[in-house]
Length: 178
Image (cartoon, rainbow, N blue to C red; front, side, top):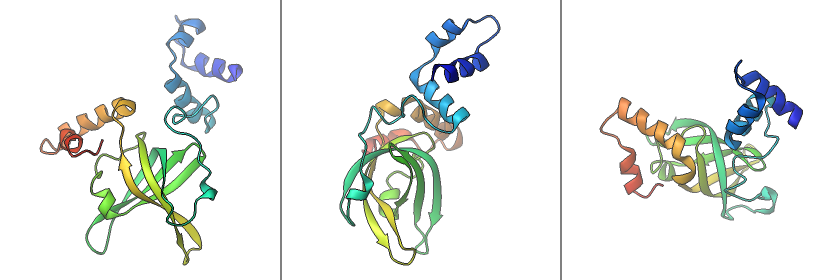
């Protein structure tokens, strides 16, 4: 591991900065981000390791609700035939990438606040789709912990303020989304 990080640090270090100085400034989060960017995987840990435990996804049956945390990688919004918004989330869990389905009744509570790099806590369950012969992961509830998402929420607040002053992160906070 140290060899990999020495190369990463050499790449990032400035001309007048020593490797030791760079190591001291290097946070756990930065290390994980660089691992994912350069190697495609997390080597020294996982962004969720402090917020959740591993889940044996195969141990749960259809409709059995369980809690887990996930790192949002992508949000794909879908406008339904009933003219409501829903979403398909690509997330990273402790066990690897997953696809979460968020139906309109749940999505309306968090629409506009689910963004890339956000850590979410969810209650989910499996629903077997016999047409595709696979199990969908359906999101029953979503919460967005403020403390662990400070940086992402700050960026989101700035975007809301610049795009549409009438919308507010404070409205979402007061509605209990977070």
